[in-house]
Image (tube, rainbow, N blue to C red; front, top):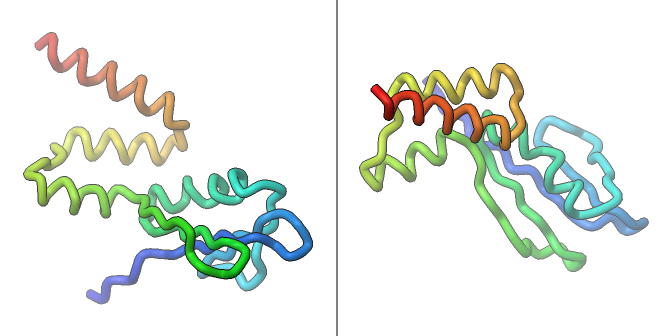
Length: 119
């Protein structure tokens, strides 16, 4: 089975103002008014599938890069000896299926773990 490389999304300033977001699957970049909006736009899809967001400055150099995605975090955690249980992994998948925002994910996770601690 061939593994595909994680997607890299490039965020760069637009010469006419605003910020461009170029994804590997899109021939035409999307334009956003601010850098913050441009960076947050691809985060939900990358968080599920995994990948990087590369932020470039006006001269084209990469000023910041960060990696998102559960698979990447699982690999980092494994180095530290931290492994998710199947129950927690399934819970995270259900969060993705329901497209929950981060604050609701944290609240549900706290609730599940608090309930488990009572047992």
